[in-house]
Length: 134
Image (tube, one colour):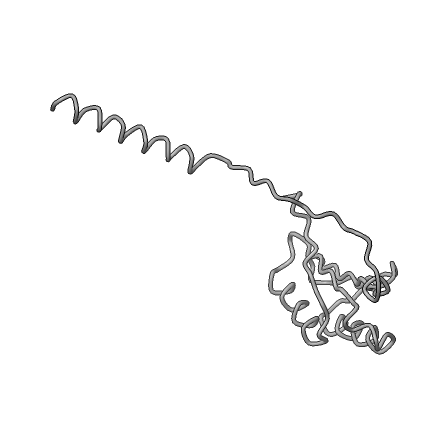
């Protein structure tokens, strides 16, 4: 093999190793975070009411409204709590945010069932999971 082919082969191997290191390295992405600003008008008057549904690992639930906790042993009982909340606050359907907090040991299907209940009542929902603990 002549010297020109040997050098090209070494450059090729070096580039393959370099791209390998780049692909497995941990790249940090910096993002610009917009800070909240003062809101004027109707948006400032809107108040979002949070509801929290905690899912225990034994498939029981805790419904938290205004820092008052109610235990539910089944999905049907939890659905009754949602119906009672919406009957008590008829104009709050679009202003209510349901935070679903599943236990790390609870089944995914139970979380999906709670999401389905929120969909049934057309409530805004979000998972509140402690990702830092993972």
